[in-house]
Image (tube, rainbow, N blue to C red; front, side, top):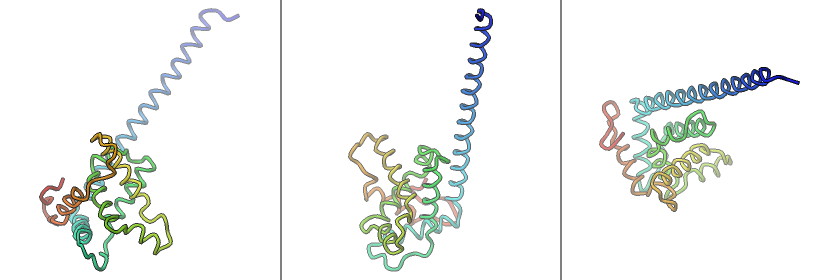
Amino acid sequence: MLDLVTWATILGTWILVVGTLAFAFWQLRQAQRLHSASTILDLRERYYSPRFRQARRDMSRWLLKTDRGEEVENWEVGHFFELMGFLTHSRVLEKRMVWNAFGVWITAYYAFMTQPVNLLDDWREEARDPLIYAEFEWLARQMAELDRRRLHEPRRNTLSLGEAREALENESRLDVLGEPGPGSS
């Protein structure tokens, strides 16, 4: 039969093991959050680079046209949001950090890529590839859900087309080499 000292030692050892594991988990979680924040900052820097500002301006101008005509050649904005969707979906990036840093732009570009004509569906059908911009679409839905929760509007699906138009109009006026355009943040 084990005495009280032995039981105390066993219990103390288990408490130490569980405490150590909990602390290690907490440290890992903090490291993941810091990595996510660092990556978001790097992505913001890329988003504001002159080359990317040009791509944003060109894409937004084309999306705002009533008669869009021939597609723009540079789809870097869509690819950027597709990558961000993948990183968020695979939990490399935290959803709320992405929402805070890029939410308005994600939902605005998505709104105009899917309204009044759903370009994503057209491209998927044309290419016979149902995965074209699937991660971007998933990300836009996640951003809309976070918007709904923050605004306490259960029936709202996404930005209104008017709100999305305002965001893209700001994008269409970007100064490519200088400071952000009016209303950009």
